[in-house]
View: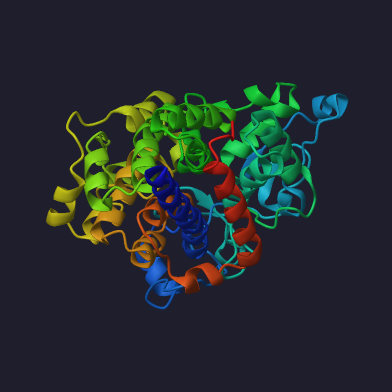
Length: 423
């Protein structure tokens, strides 16, 4: 009984820290989200991000304006299904039910995508403030509250609350709506059942993104073993992301997360599980060069994009060796792209954790200042380094805008997760 009590207490303490780490990693990274040029991060944040700050305007590299969302409005109305998930943020998108109010007139140099003139390059999280969380983190909260309300995990209940959160006007203050959400609601508007609305990575290459990792990792902890946890994680992933790359990353992250929550020595565990990874043959430099050559990734032929994302090295990823041999400026973007793809982001985030000795603040700030998809990568990294530590910096927790609400949700979810009776 004593051993079981101690094991439960370790898991409970580390799970709370992991969940705090997720929300901290998100909020720290949010202001520099989708900065691909790290020189712009240094310039816009007075040498770099050192804590919670507001997102700036303009965002020098923003190509949020003009992203697409095309639900079948006629079918949705006939089926009495909500389709407007953008609400006051629709002005930034090409949609089937509203007019884009800002035109793209230039082309950004780092990624090759069309962008508006500088004054109209709105930040992806325009309107959020220092310490606020993004939509992706709020959807983790939707999952946690769903579990708390019922005392267990229910897929159908989560999907209903996912729909409600996005369809309710005024609920979401964050303009940035990931492509998986837009594709999901496009399929939903056409009449697909909620459990079958997730888009395929083979159809839309960016479905294979970090955004598919956070909630599955969180839900994996409500069972005792990594074996069963991985099954739960993959099933939850498939509700929103049909992606081989996301599933592959979860195959490494779920057992690593489980080991850290159980008290494993962090850097040894990270190095051991990293060896299961096979990194992409295409480096970050080569990937971004292809984007520029094609004037944006959307112009790369589908079969070439598939190869970019699925052709992997045949040797294990030795993260401890990379830490000894390379410094961060040589790894960030040059070796591993900071884009949304887990085949690059997973080895990069484990490199950050190992390189900074799983120090929560140092690791999450390194991720924030690396830019790219630092928000979603930062949430995964926050789970990892939070689970690796007995204590977290109190100022990082209390600096979160939703500190009081988060404390109740994290405590409530953790109590259920360790109860052994939540599925």
